[in-house]
Image 1 (tube, rainbow, N blue to C red):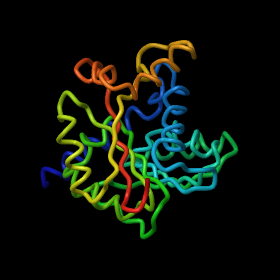
Image 2: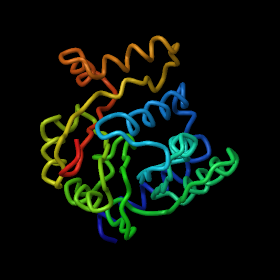
Image 3: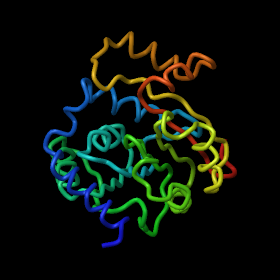
Length: 223
């Protein structure tokens, strides 16, 4: 078996196994999903309800549900068939609609473009075999902007930005994703952390500690 194929199969089996309890990894799953929806809506070129979003690495549909509830037309993809089943169940139980597909981000070809591509999947750069090639493929699926995350302790910020730029994106910016994974904070604290994500100097402090950062990139002609 080719090493890349073996790695993908191992990843698929891993996430098939943890799918039933996936969202419980977060102390406050709603806060995680809400922050991603806010970034899609207002970070960079704004998106209004009715816009189309391609979510790659959707896991059990935590963010998929939140995007659909916010009025977006969502197509969500994950490598794990069990995750996709859980996502379908979640969206259906909420009385919402989304297109859920089993797919590999390295070979994804949907034959259509979306207003935005979201790949905040803890982390995008860790799951793409060749991040630049995969980002170039995703550029062909995007009309406006793309959001992807990375671990700044394993991939330098400058390298991550350079990779996104080389894939054909511009108007690139970044922020840490300061929604705690293991601790549930009150709304006022979450609002303070969200504001800190965009404060020069302060926003760099978490990069050496824990958590991930998110890159926002847009296509030519966008703000």
